[in-house]
Image (cartoon, rainbow, N blue to C red):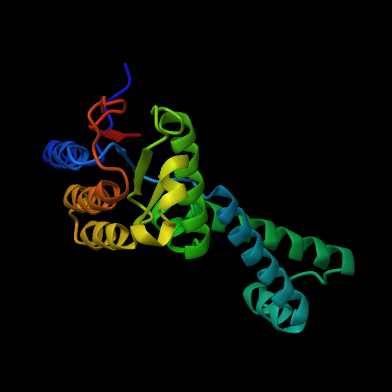
Length: 228
């Protein structure tokens, strides 16, 4: 039986769920909150770094062959055999392969891999993951197309908001700026639940302005914080 995912505490769950319920009390909008440990494994980034390091290592050896032959002679006390051109090429390639493998092994340590991933790539992957989750669990799931997803990816320290058709038509993406800023600030301070709750409050203010609560407003999407 799979173990339960716990990216945040039970107290964080309670805080976020209460914030969603309070925000939806004043709007016909439906807020879905999702938190994930990370949005991507960034295997391609590790491959690029390993290839770059291997290429640099081979290039340096090829540019300064006499220096490295001198090192070889010192290590062997001058008793090493003279390399032919093909043998030298094979040695350079072998060193490049070893460098590639070594860098790949080093980058199995996820914190380093995350640190070496450019911020722009992280932002793209978080956005793509948020859109995928939105399409699966939020898009067109309400009668008035008033669903909005708040997505937090902890390892990247990034979040995103994706809104359904009716909301996107009235609320531009930059309007969510205050909500995003409040969320990221608290996540960096080690308070993801407080951050998401504050973002939900800010989102609720925007939604209440453009989509006030009507007479008939069923709760069509879950209020609880979803962990994946």
